[in-house]
Picture (cartoon, each protein chain N blue to C red):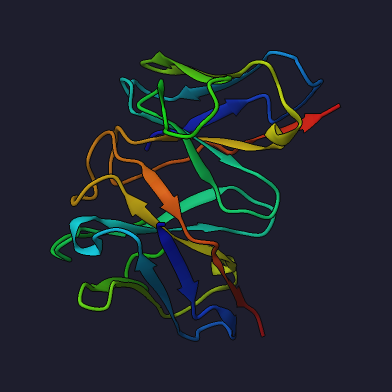
Length: 124
Length: 108
């Protein structure tokens, strides 16, 4: 059974930092690109960042570029999202998602497995 | 950037009805369009990829159609458990995985 379990969310002040983790099981982690998608309270879905299976290629939404860093530890089957310079508008549930194949940024890609999400609240 | 516009934003239908949700792209995205279902309190779930490919385990009452700029998700017959928000997503212009704003489906 495929499982993606996010952790690390919480309350942080504006300008602060937080690191999210996503522990994966049920598939060969190092064969697949992974991504983060967020959902602000009562709002729609926004892709945040993606990372290829080898960690050789990372992409970011313009809204987080320069502030967030995606990484992975294939020996620990874990995906990370380091978030710095957090803003109120970063408040959201952050979902860890599995991509179709090893390379992100391919036409026809899709997110076939999602974690349950972890809530990040940026507020003073 | 590609804009994805769903219509309607919300709708209410009865069990047994045929429901159609539309998604329009601001430019040609060929068939690179996915549909997701988010039931209340849960993470989104992939229903359909590449405009019309039903994912394993998804009931056959769900179907997708379209190409270019205009796409539809059809549910027929509607079941009570289909209460959800439905999102389309383009994967033509990557890595900007743009989602539509969502369509909220209520059951009368």
